[in-house]
Image (spheres, rainbow, N blue to C red):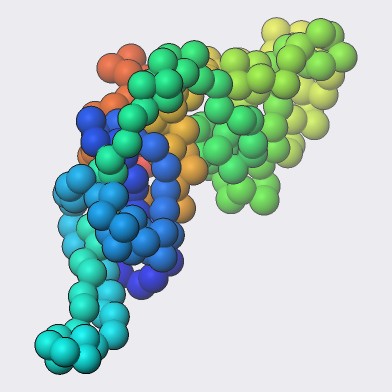
Length: 199
């Protein structure tokens, strides 16, 4: 069994990833009969009270991946045009905590968000224009483009899909959850190579 901080991956009944849940929210879905099926490993066995008539104690077993009932047609349509909110933790994870200029790996507190086309030159604060950079490289590049600063960009920035963003938001993604999510990444996703590089 895992400690109670391990997140549960929730999908719709068709198996499309939706979000991460804390164990309390997962137990609530089981209790309300909203879980269509579960897969992955058993994470928790939560014991409830004892039934006064039968003398039996209730138990809810929570798996690492749960599919829930519900109509998600609108979400499925929106997912095709989904642009996730840009934030540094997800950006740094997208780029495998590597500075995309020097290629070294850093702790998050030593990283920064660099605008490939600087904002002062008309660049936007969007996924396709930002990369992870160490503070030294970001300071050296300053308000210049990589070409102007004679710095080579090691990878092309990209906007994560819905499934990729769910992965990027996960705190400690278990192997079975990772395998499930990777099956929903586009075949051409740069995350496939970056995840292989990390392991």
